[in-house]
Every structure is written in C-alpha cells, then in structure tokens.
Image (tube, rainbow, N blue to C red):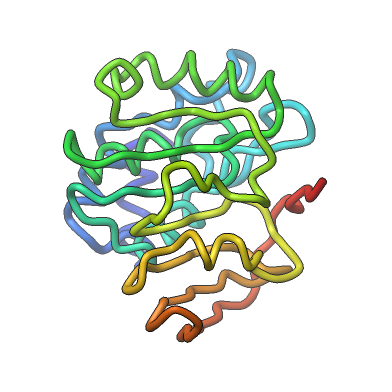
Length: 207
C-alpha cells in the first residue's frame, strides 16, 4: 500500500472527512517520522514502535482525533506527547503560520527524534511549533490558555491542570483508559463530555 492508498482507505472508512485534514495528511508523509528500519511499513494502518516503549499513532486514530479536535487557522494548541512529531506536524499544517503548537515530550531521545523530523518541514524554524522536554501531565502554564489540548497517552482521568489551562470555548481531545474523550469548556468549571470507546494507547506517565 502506498500513502495515497492509505489516505483513500481512511476517507472511505469515514475516519478522514475534512478537506483541510485530508490535505494535511497528503502533505505530511508518515514515512518521514519513522526510524529507518520501519520506513517500509509507514503506510500500514497500525501503530508502530519508535523506541522507548512508545509508538507512532495508528493512522485511523490520528485521523479520528484530529477530526474531533476541529483545529482552525491561528489556534494555539498544547500537545501532550510529541512522540515522533507526526501529529505535531499535521497540526502545525492545520493551524498555519499564525497558529502555534506547544508540544511536550518527557523522553529526551524522542524529543530529539521529533525535532529532526520536524526540521524537514520548517515548522520549528518558522516558529509554528515549539518542542519542550517536561512532564506533560502538568501541562505548560507559561503559554496558557490554549484553544485546544490533545494527548497521545491514556490517563486514568483528564488532569485538572489541563482543564485549567484551556480557554473557555476550548476543547480537549485525550485518551482516558480505552476511550477517546472530548471535553468542551463551557465556563470556568463546566464541561461537556463525549466519549468514544474501543481504543488502545500507551499510558500517560505521571511523575
């Protein structure tokens, strides 16, 4: 399967719907975010290991979560778990030159891997993305509040600090146990919650 066939299958199965997200997938090649020995498997619709017991997201999960996130041009986003940087790059493409992605990774080796991958697209140099090495469970208060927050690892429950760092009117899309949860912030302490069951993620490490 080549990349276009993978994208077409995600469209056909209903995971990719929004033209701008489809365009981002076409422009940001998953192959560029994999270790050399796994590049030939880049277009499999499966999660793949990237070292340090972490994975690059399964394409259908990446597509599903980005569709739920509903990113708009110019938005400021907090990403918990940079991993390979693939999702970071997809989001950078979606928020555009006026947007900003703050992405946190706790593992230095993966942070460096993602940095090298993102340099292929110029997002770091242009200031659209900023990569941080830190404990993502605490968020990143320096740049709060955020329009959107997305996580790549499953928590037992969405951390309160993420909710605090979200703008009113903002949205969190994050794995909780074996579900993907969408939280919309209606007021300072009121949230609307939707849950989509039947997913599997690496666990969020909380220090």
